[in-house]
Image 1 (spheres, rainbow, N blue to C red):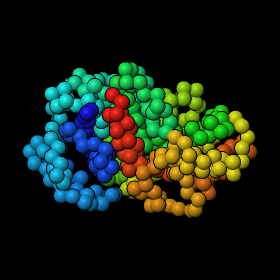
Image 2: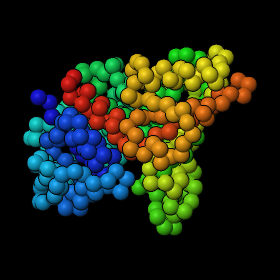
Image 3: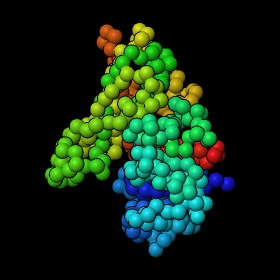
Length: 333
């Protein structure tokens, strides 16, 4: 039986584990992070966005205990665990530091056979493949895909929309904007940050930001001409992406929405994409497991310009796909 190691126990790593345990897909052979065990256990036990874990959770030296599961814990502040000695086949990296080839290669050098990165790689040369459920996961090649990127939450949200539009109407070019909840890259108070715009209080400002989603989408569809940007806003989780497109084939709002309805209920995007028929705000999609939830009443058309909006819980939706892809890989490596 193939085994998994989890490196990085932050926002995505903890939700990833919650989902894996809830579905009984797997229990990691080991977890690695740079913080102390009791604090990480407490953060897993009580989550501001997703509530309390239903079992006792505790942390002691070298161990995280969740219910009756004892998961070895390794502090990776100085060194990544010896995955070979632990018998780990697949490492899921949720640290944000494996977006370069060198960062991901560390796990392979330490004995892991495969690395699944929970972030968009800097360039296509920094990973062997970008694989998304419902999009191109069936192209996984165990012999050649050792470092696999899952893109970002926005990548997954947009990819589902792009797939439906491409297959039904074609795309000449497009521009997206994502309104995204603030993240750990920002500060709660005004202070100098690496990215100057992040220097202002995240809970009090709308902060323009970059998005790696366009680059990751082009890893999948090399001729796709789409670019975009992000705005971080004072919500704890839950985001929305608006994609404005010029399609190759003329279409109506009704035709586009019917295509989304069909994709959500039949085919590879079932369980990945959903649609909303009524008018909602962001709280509606918190803890929703779908990657892309198309708001059908917001679909609009003016001349040749098509506008589509898709919601996504940027933590929970993405973590669901990450856990599903990890389970998929474990069966095929």
